[in-house]
Length: 315
Image (cartoon, rainbow, N blue to C red; front, top):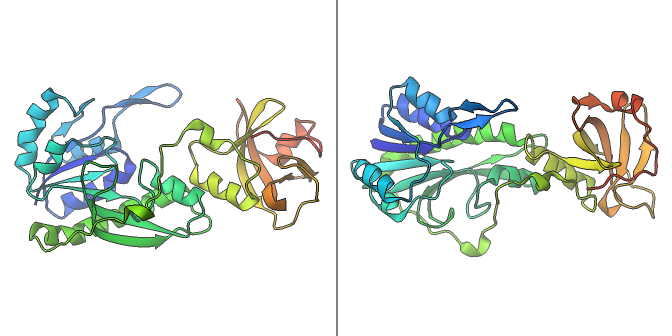
């Protein structure tokens, strides 16, 4: 098929790579502009751009797509394509763009819609303790992930999965689903099914404050959030006014003493300390990263601190 591809982060690389390998004609790739990355703020191209240029594909990086100038450039391009494929591009497409290709615009979304519509579905699925997630191939409309469902595939998240690891798995799964479904889309043999809006949940963009621990949650819920929010926004608390990132944590499985406020340090061992959480649960902390310092074991952290049972960690 003659395709336009829109995508930006690593999640969007496997589908594009699969389309190229399968011999589809990628007329152009549209991605976000290069952005400063890291402490040194080095201007860095999106992963999709790197792949596209390596294969000699024309790349566009508009700051905005809802302008007359953008429409003048892209509308003829989209009308010449049979379909546009979108994977984590980072912009809501205007109506004229959605309608221009013969088969419309197809989105690879990293959740089992209508659950987890929004910018961070992988993170929130883990953070909320889901056991299963997946990918959805959707016929895009002008809403936020509200288009009709063409195909879906599910996968077990796993008890130790982080957002980084699950992103890689879902990217590959999305690539497989796309390649399997494109022939039927090209031939008009698909019948997209409308989403049940009553079952919809949201996965809003992550903010730095989402990483602050709510000690009223259970220890298990806090661990879910730690896995879902790695690497950003992490899982942190404040000790004596200083930020402390909780790097390696797990539920103890033991009940806490009654009458102890959530966030209270209940025990200190040689290699760990324990914190009271909601519903009488306890969280075992084995590695931390104090503000401005390297990640370290709790043993090393305790050697340089005066932590005592009964102290409180603030969320």
